[in-house]
Image 1 (cartoon, helix red, strand yellow):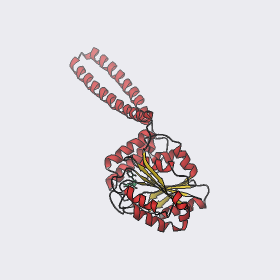
Image 2 (cartoon, helix red, strand yellow):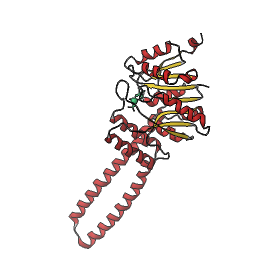
Image 3 (tube, helix red, strand yellow):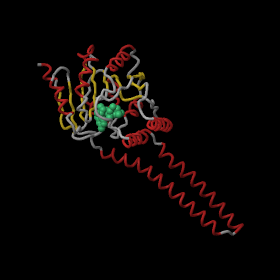
Image 4 (cartoon, helix red, strand yellow):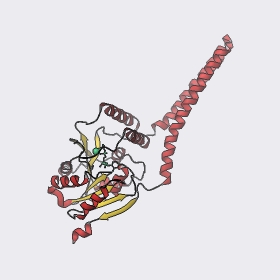
Length: 315
Ligand code: UDP
Ligand code: MG
């Protein structure tokens, strides 16, 4: 049996060596089954060098994938999945906020009950500001109301799953990836396991508010066509109101003959209609721009270097 552990890394030079040591310690009972897949997502610090050091120790099978630039965590996860050939696959961050010991807990759940295909960790106690929590709650309410898949609010991408789940995820070729939606979309029986999130060992989070907001929009546009349907609904509704309004005005004009207020009303109606039209054209543009990116069919990531220490391990 083989367990592939995928670790996306972006500017984690202060964490990767410590992560590796902690992982070896906490997963010592299954170390002979593990392969590590580090994805260096275009780090600008010494992460690449540290990963080479880890691979060169030849203690465990280690694959290191180095991107030509920063493509984002989603692309890093995809690269990891593309190179994962274990019977079980785990995804974990490099900053030790997610302790490797939970991987063993997740595996035990999968081994104990064959019916489960995946285990997803969720944070018991949330370590985020009230404002961020509010925005996240609103996002989940919104996406669950309008999308075809149900997203579990606190579930992270700290997960362990069977190879069949990995194959299903890799069969999805969309470029603007939103992992939480993808995990939900492929289905499979998932066990949700609570875990305690730790403080980052070194460095800072890579997620600014703007990045999170953009990610949330990607999620909504990738998993719901509701905004597009809105255009038709509002168009029909606005059209009907406009027609009734115009008819009422014409009747009123014929009866009272007050021309000036009618001009004002028409102006107001024009402003209202053109602005809603603009808003919805913008919405349409959101889908178009995403289609544009998909049609270009660019690769999700570009690998500058790939190294697998397996040959040296066998010597
Ligand atoms: N990460 C990545 N590419 C990026 C941003 C982040 O590979 O563009 C990695 C990062 O190195 C870490 C994981 O994704 O291992 C989670 O990132 P971070 O800790 O910044 O996110 P948070 O824990 O704050 O959600
Ligand atoms: Mg983190």
